Structure formats: structure tokens, C-alpha cells
Length: 303
Image (cartoon, rainbow, N blue to C red; front, side, top):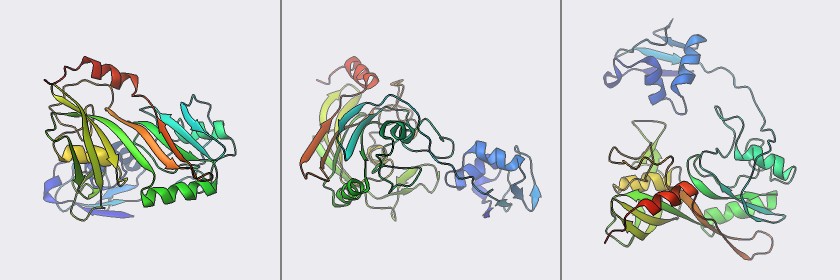
């Protein structure tokens, strides 16, 4: 059971909004469902979904027992950029979730992989994340590596830890970055103001992003970002931190973004790793998605 005491800053907020801001991975819709099922009380009493909290209210949340589920195979088109008996590299489209989770039980990359690979996926990630070595955001497109067996999974995971697996992203950011290159070294952790977001916080996990400018346009800069670490939403948080958020990012962007892009302009373009079986150096690239490329062509180069 979760117990929350309402502070003065939250007084007057709807109960679902208050809980969504203070409980990690809890949406307002999920709160409403829990209220209707009698699993949320205030000061020991059941309340309605439009209840507004007051300072000092004691909110108790009882989470029902989760029903376990297992990802099922689903036939979907996959843009395969590299494949052999140990490894698969996929160009993931924006809008696709990597693995099943509450609210996204199917239609994920894992569902597609189970259909395409059958039994040829590592089991280290469990039944919900078979073969998944690393992830990229739902709205981020680009390359993602998949392990077909446990040997490959362990080897690739070690490369992530030792940073011999290289990942380069192309990002279109708002404003003009003056430096030709730079490094952002700022720790990232769960936001204290909004638990659904990540933020730069003093006691966060080490996070380092290297960037270099590829092109400058009126109002925008195209940069290549290389990850030294792989924190959740790292590039998006870091670029927003230096006041150059990703174009089209509705979470970490700002009101000055008038691009109107249908999706954020962040693409995992290059992937380089040591093959787990042959020890060859494998380099994989994929083009920018059409919406990203189309928007770039509309921009005026900065003179």
C-alpha cells in the first residue's frame, strides 16, 4: 500500500492529477480506475474521481495484484539492417514500443521479434523482453540490437558496460549551437517535480553525451550525439539542459518550438559493436526517417 500526505503545494488539485504526479508510472486513467474499484481512499474514506485534495489529506493507494502476461508473437514488418545466427539489428520506427508493459501489451517490437525469430531469441531478458539488449524511446527511431542467444546477449551487455558498443544519434535541436562540438556531463535521475520525467539532479546517475554540429539552419542545429552512458531519455534531457531541446519533443521541449513536426527529430543512425562470436567489428547505419528528412529539406541554411 502507498501512503501519501498532501503538501500545501498540491492543495486544490484533482486526486488523479495529484497521484499521477507523485507515484511513478501511474497515469491519471489508472488512478480513475483504482478510485472506481475502491482502491484509493482519502482519510480512510472512498472518494469520487473529481475529488480535490486538501493540505494534510492522507491518501492511501492499494494496488491490486498484477495479472502476469506473456508476450505473444505478432506478424509485423521489420526493417532489418543486419542479421546472422547470433545478432539482429532492427531500424525501429517512431511510435513503436520496444517491449510489452501495462498499457502496451501488444504491438511492440518484442511481439514482432517473437514472430520473426521464433525460438531464436535470448532468454536473459525474461518472457517480456526476450533478446532485448538495450532500448530506445517509443518516439525515437533508429537502430536497436537484438541478441538471438544467451551467449550473444551476455557479450553485447558487457560491451555496453565497457563502452565498446558505440551508438550515434542524429538530432535536430532548437536554436543555434555556437560550439562545433562539446560534451554534456550532467547526472540524470527521476524528476522530483514530475515522476514521469527524467531530469538533471545532483544525486542522479552519471550521464555523458558527446556532440558535434553537422549543419546549422535558421532556428535549428543538426547535431550528431554519441552516448558514453545510456540513461533513460539521456539525449533529450541533456539537449534541453543546454537550452537546445530536440525539435518535436513534446515532453522536454518548450513553447518556442513552432516546427509542427509529427514526432521528435531524434534518430539512432549508427551502431558499432564487436561481434560476439567472430569478434569482427560490425558497423551498421540507416537513413533518417522520411518525416525527419522532409523537414530538414524545408529549413534554410544559416549563412
